[in-house]
Amino acid sequence: MKITNEQLRETFLSPQMSCYFEKKLAPLSSDEVLVRIEETLKFLNIATYFHCSIPVAKEIDDIWHYWILETREYQRLCSMLQGQQFLHHSSNDYLRCQGEGAHVHENDLEEEVQMLATYVLNYGPLQKDRVRYWTFAAYIMGKNDWDLEKLNEWLVSAEVAPCTGQ
Image (cartoon, rainbow, N blue to C red; front, side, top):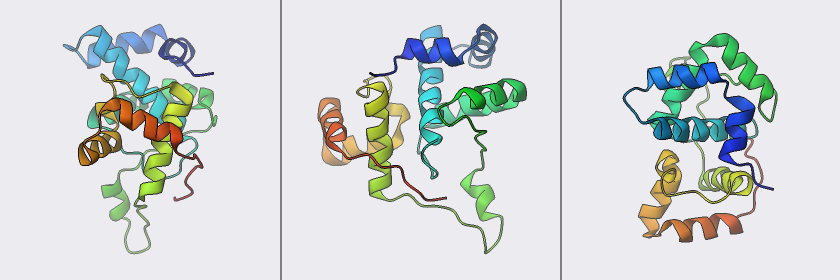
């Protein structure tokens, strides 16, 4: 059974956080704010299973950053996500500043496909108004000259096994 956008909002988005995002993302429409929140929630749920970089658009990363700023709400959210663990955030730039011993994981094609296949498995096909937030999905469509239907068919056929990179 697929998880709907409404279920995501009802489970994870408090009225206070909804109001907060509306203020932070003004003058975007309420509908666009909700789309970005829903995609961020999907990203964060997927991140509990994949310990590697999940390429999402800046708009999704921005929502994550705003959520992190409300530390109590972010801690509450993390405790409710699939893995029930705090999701730390470090940019690749910061990791590269850690010196020679630092490891910045570079995803391979299989990991990228697995993440998108996990999305389709849990949330249904990528939609026209949402695919732009998943940068690898947009890349695959452009590189192969695929429409959204072809991308979703391909992802449904992909075998899903979480990546293990750190």
